[in-house]
Length: 242
Image (tube, rainbow, N blue to C red; front, side, top):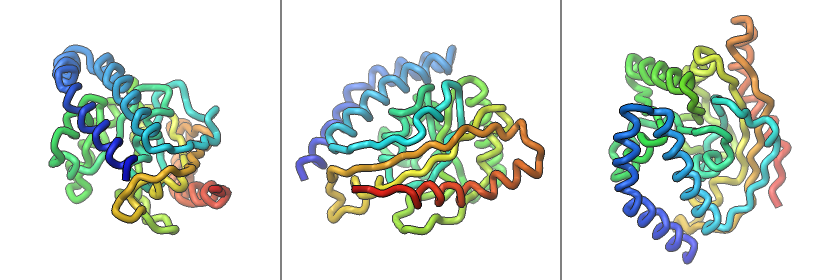
């Protein structure tokens, strides 16, 4: 209970007191979006590190050497809001996420998601989805990494949900690496607990070697995309949480 209260207070006051900085980033983004994303990313990363500390989360990172020093598309299973929080602190470049359009209706949060460069996806609108993929591609070309969770929602079962592969094209079109990742035990930090209390947990996040889809033949590329869920499952099967 105490962890939940402290985390909520940390999040609430951090967002409120940073409002003036938000308006500064918003103004900066009109002239230099890359600089604005970088500034916002550094702030948000510090804020997320505070949340991880308050949650008491022990993070085991496997394959840290596979995290690129350049913009990349990170693709993995989705267990928790802490997927985003922890991944943001591990990226070596400014990072945003492909988010559901429903996040636009949240109070305050969309403003900060805009600050770091997030793109919002309407999965029911094909034309809008293509526009979002194009927008994400352009942002990656400018130096922004993106996190993509093809299951489309947080999954609290032991079986991966069907993957939607449309977003993979961003790595191909931006000529950036795609990094497959597997996340274990993240849901038990918060969402899967009774009353949504925040608990001290040991989590594992594993990064596979970067792959460059734009360097592949089309058939090899399709085979690679199709095998992503199986590759994630292979990594998950090796994860043992104490």
